[in-house]
Image (cartoon, rainbow, N blue to C red; front, side):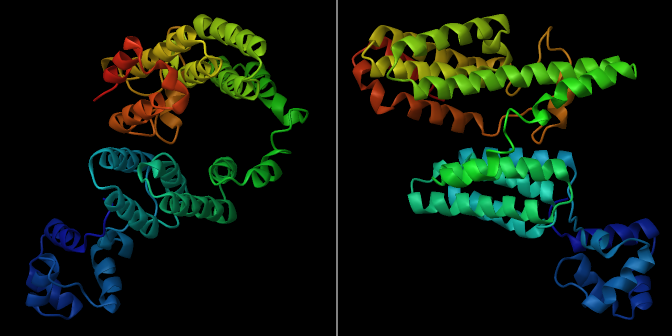
Length: 370
């Protein structure tokens, strides 16, 4: 139950207790007509009566109001995915207003605030108003700051620190990102080796299933991280074709070895897209088309057979438990329609202007139309 719903709750509690409206009215000292109006939603009781009602039904005031300051993981996932769908079909500002109202309602539910920050940074670009985009990112940033300053969940605070850095980067404040992450991400610190230490500890206490699960998760995330870093590496070296092509060769070996086109088509699609940009910058149309088609293939694979989201396979067969523990349960952070529209916008990047006369390029665009 996401909204206060006193009328239904008071009616349900009264029926469960098997008493009449008149009996309830006598207990709290009001008229039967008052109870009737409560149950039909025409009025609500005076605040001083709420403790009496809560005591009578042996519930908390929050329960009698239907108010939940904390949401379960399943509730948070459902709200997020429902809002994703609404962003794809409804008026943008209406969905933003709805999500903003949820922030006010669950302002002390820090995991939920984190999810709404994710929601906003995955959809802020749907408005073409640049000032509005900045405003939404700033609101998401403020939610992260609230989490960091008030939550006692260390893991959640760490996630909020990284999400805050992402938002700062989107806002163009690169120096703040450096200041907040440079020391945390320092590869020379022993913390970067802690995964192997934990895996060995699991083995020592004979928790082999846990060691297996954690090893798979670590391998998977490191592979995805390598591909993500490779995207930035070829961006940095976009004018040095020899470096780019060696990077492409190495990443494709990893992608083929671990079947990333199926396992995580989202991550490898970003790599193929950046490769296509580099080749088109170099005027190499054939290779640009080749990797742009690989990009489109990955987008289609992403939605193949309705299996949207993160995936496991026969090798990484312990990932599903981890996916379920994630904020979105392995689901994608945006609706299919929004993802496809974003991909089409990507194909309209100015660097691909040299491909406009190519039939294959035109067909790729059509393949992504919902």
